[in-house]
Image (cartoon, rainbow, N blue to C red; front, side, top):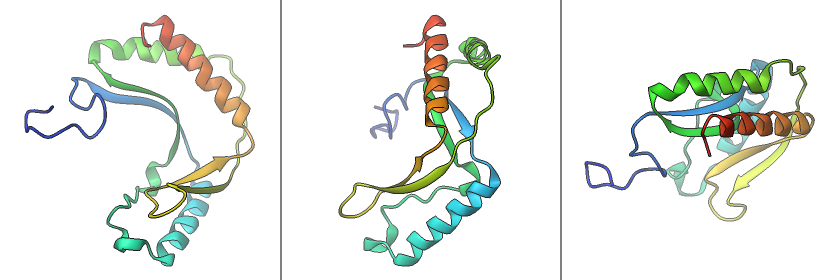
Length: 140
């Protein structure tokens, strides 16, 4: 519980520290195409007037590789070292995004997701290496 008596919006939201995550930014040409998809979905109309849909700012779109959660400032340097260790020497790779859907599949959609087609293995491998390095640094 928070000091206001309300429940936190997500597990750990009432813990001290910054909510950190590692993510891959999506380049502007892809964001422009995603914006077209979002505009199409909005134009179709959303049951209930869209009050249950939380539209995100498109400039903030990213592919999350690892959510660290609430992280005290004293641990940020260790998290940074872990990321550097996981990415040093890794070759760049391309990804493509195609297709998608909604959560839940039926009824009123609450989230729109996009499917990574090409580059999935590279993303999974990078996320796994980040996880390994973070475990060495004390994250679970």
